[in-house]
Length: 93
Image (cartoon, rainbow, N blue to C red; front, side, top):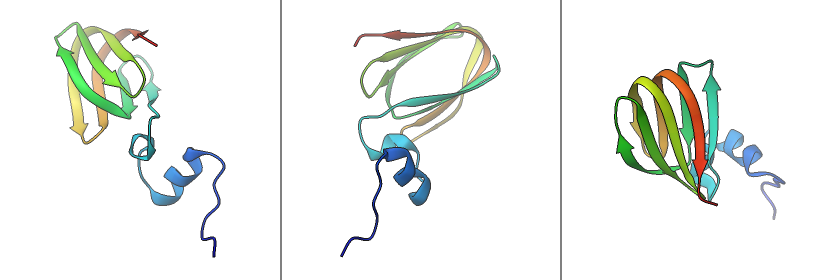
């Protein structure tokens, strides 16, 4: 008996009301203007400074650069960074 059939992890994530990072090696960002970025699928915090925050994602490293940066939320594998965001830079693979 087949209960669910999903072609994309996003469908399962929506159905279960879970952030995407809980479903495997997928990280994704939601950018709200230049003042906030939500990261799902975060594997860890590497550096935290006023002008940059570096995070380990599922398959690379993300550098969020700007000024007055703060971790608004850090719960499980989800982070919300607020402040004046000037750049998002992916490092690694």
